[in-house]
Image (cartoon, rainbow, N blue to C red; front, side, top):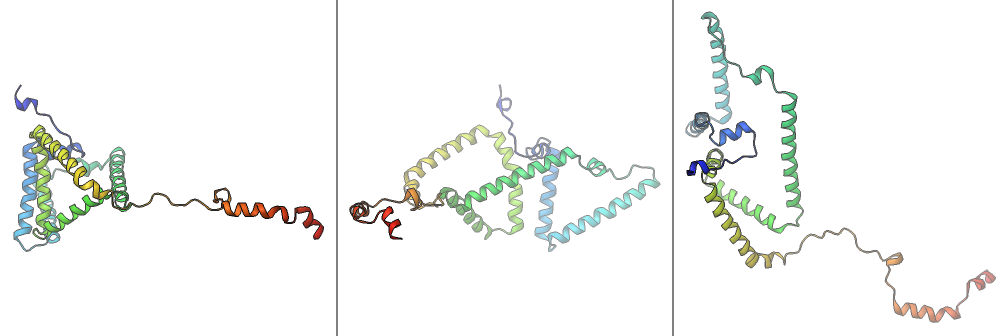
Length: 240
């Protein structure tokens, strides 16, 4: 069997249509979308228009074009502007519930990650996030916000397909890197990380009242020696 036949398809944690787009299942469709994004980036980069100005001008052009198209089609007995099904019928209840569930799941994952980060108990996670933020800050010094955004889009359109084409090689290299990183961390990083004080998980200390109060042997002995000579309960009653 050829290498192409043995190649395994990968799946992405996104919608099926978006997955097909990012994995170039339809090269013509994906190529058209990617070319449009690239053209938009070049227009913004080379022109002096802001993103808001360009979007407004594009929408103005589309509104005028659809108006002329619809009215001209009535005179020449041609079909008008093709309207997508989602604009005609909207989204169904099942689709809205599915989108809400996906959004809720993503928000909960983000909140859980934030809780782990700000708890101060996971030193390795804190160091990793700090390192990533430091790298992003340094990269931001060399790229504009627009250029950085296009770079992210470029990676989104290329890395999943490259991984699908070279899955076995990339997995092998990634496993070696992870194994060596764990060995280096256990040898050099873990001894220093373990010395860092962690946030205490206990919120209360043992009480010194009642049965938990420590017993002083000297005071017990003194009280035992004084008790026989002191007044008893009956003597107190007779006195008062």
